[in-house]
Amino acid sequence: MKKIHLVVLLLMSYVSIAQDLTVISGGSITIHKDNYVFVGGDFTNTAGTVTLNSASDQYSSLIINGTATGDVNYKRYINAYTDNGISDDNDLVSAPVSGQTFGAFSSNSENANLLASETLRAFAPFDKSVGAYVNYNTSTNANTVIAAGTGYRAATSDGGTLTFTGSVETSTVAINIQDSGPFYADWNLIGNPYPSYVNLAAFLNHEVSSGVTNLDILESASGIYGYDGDVSDGWDIITLANVGSRLLAPGQGFFVAADAADVSTYDLEFTPAMRTTSSDDDFIAGRSSDNDLTFFNLNLSTSNKSYNTEFYFNANATSGLDAGYDAVVWGADTSGFVIYSHLVENNTGAPIALQALGNDDLSAISIPLGVNANAGEQLTFSITEFNLPSSSTVYLEDSFKNTTTLLNSSAYVLTPVVNLSGTGRFYLRFTNHALSTTENTLSSLNIFNESANKRVVINGVLQQSTTARIYDLQGREVGSQDLDSNKTSQYMDVGYLSTGVYVVSLTNDQQSISKKIIIH
Image (cartoon, rainbow, N blue to C red):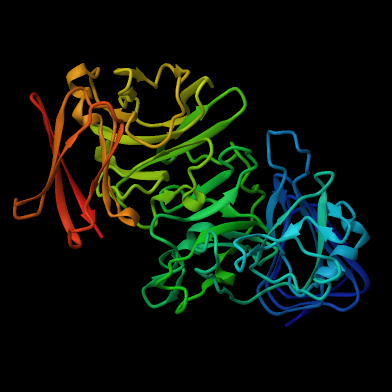
């Protein structure tokens, strides 16, 4: 094959080279932030300089179809630490090249903007042994290799770039995700190992073994969690419900949740076939939306906090758990300011951050919402992104105040007099008519099984004395309890029941409602 030998090449546009490419001594290649180079053959850098550039919203790419020999430099944009209360001033990144030690990386004068405190640097993997970020130390981690496919939390002083120097990955990169550690055991921080974009749909659907995809190795209600720079919710969550044509930027880190049943058998894989070119950005809030999707985002905000929960509608999803489509709140953590939803069917109490539903659910469905917020703070519920059919109406029901608000045209504002926690008060409803008071009683209760504590949870406001009964699938009553109308959260012990499907029935003098639950 014919080889191209380069002395100096300053790339101002996209370049595709069918032959081998060799950068000789004294030669240089600079790839601008919105450009790419594709090498159809082998790449060799003997003693030249190859530099790829990036900015916060544009990343250069280098794709090598053959083998790669010699180092390249990737100047990867990293968010600035400002401590301004708007963003938490960190990025999740990965090395777009391989083989560099942290000692060489941290001592590079071009990386003097990496935040430092004595020998510690703001460059931290998510350490599974302690379940937290642990910053690297220039002394003890001097010989630690910045591994391909590993994600890191990083921050700079100026919002500039950090220079990674190493070889270009041209083959499959396997990542051994784990379900271990004292905290957040299932969560793993990984990243794109290539100096090019990666097609996320190809990544999720890639088969690591016959019939087993990357997505199958992740927990059912999860996907890709990319940090979006927002101080409140912080996560751009991608599943099959919204992946569309989304891409993963070079050097981009993200979290995934490992399925405990699969981690000992399979590794996640990045493959060369996933590589692609683009001038797209990373997971920055508000930048990525796909008008071909049917969805809306519900926002809960105060004067200084904001949190989103998402809903997508498609032909492949249902009102129950759809593996690969639904996704929980990161870490299932609802301790801070948060809004989330519960599954409509077979609800297990998992806090859902992204819920996928069927297309038919746009006409009539009630979705329980969970809210955690402080008393005395004004709360605003509003739709921030809306791409539903023009006939679709979205109501927010406050069962405590017995009110409904059409969110299509206005926000719902209230100042709670007590702290809000959990579900049972707020619901999203889709209907073609205004909701009446009689529709807002027993149907406004959220009923689900809490497996960890072996109990059925009944959250919401009761208008009058109500009895809860549990039946098996043969219709036999296996438990009952009178509910207290003065309580908004009530529990029925089901530790004595065997695993299976049951029906919880609530009745009072005027109404009744039944709900299927699964007891584990």
